[in-house]
Image (cartoon, rainbow, N blue to C red; front, side, top):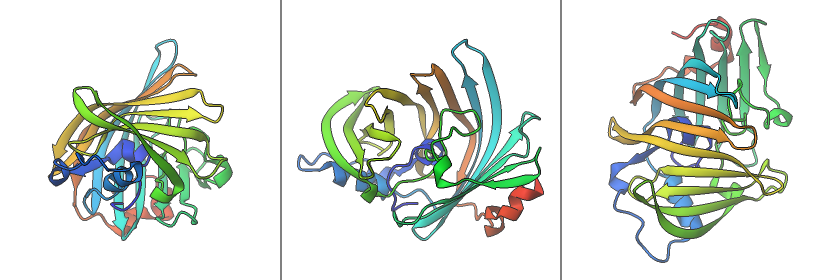
Length: 266
């Protein structure tokens, strides 16, 4: 995935940056697209595996907790990812498989396996704006975006959370895209987001992603904890990793629809 633009959830789930890039980004003539390409091209290994806890909190403060194992593997400029729900019992065995393509003209393939129904649902393009498993991430958020799908502007440079950042605005080329614009605070030291704002089609602020914890894992800077807040719905989803590893040699067999339908991941 090293040649793709910032995604929403894989930016969110496995966003990484090379320590070697830490000294980049002081040139005064950098454009917004230059920065987007720098983030897009950051190394993040050939594959990744993580275990995480998803905590969903509604407007009344009631929480639901989900335990998830995630797998992600690059295939040239394309990638495949799998999310498997381990707990609680009512979602155990639910799995989401995605094939992401670098070509912006090619639509990503997505499947959701629901063990209670014992069937796999293919996620059509018309469903991309639906929210995934009660979280504040849509199916489209879980995918990646090519750099060419957006037009970028460097709005300013400022400090956020104690880190020097570029404030980068991305406006979709597709006027029907679910967000009218996305604004990211990109840390100059590790090329990771510190904050992301998502604006809906009418221009209102819809969601805010805040990165809480960043760590170096296996030589890659990684987001270890973050929270997505839906400011209109007053709902939040916090993702916290317990374990994350890179370049472990994941089998291609993981990334098959038949693997979802087994109901368990080995």
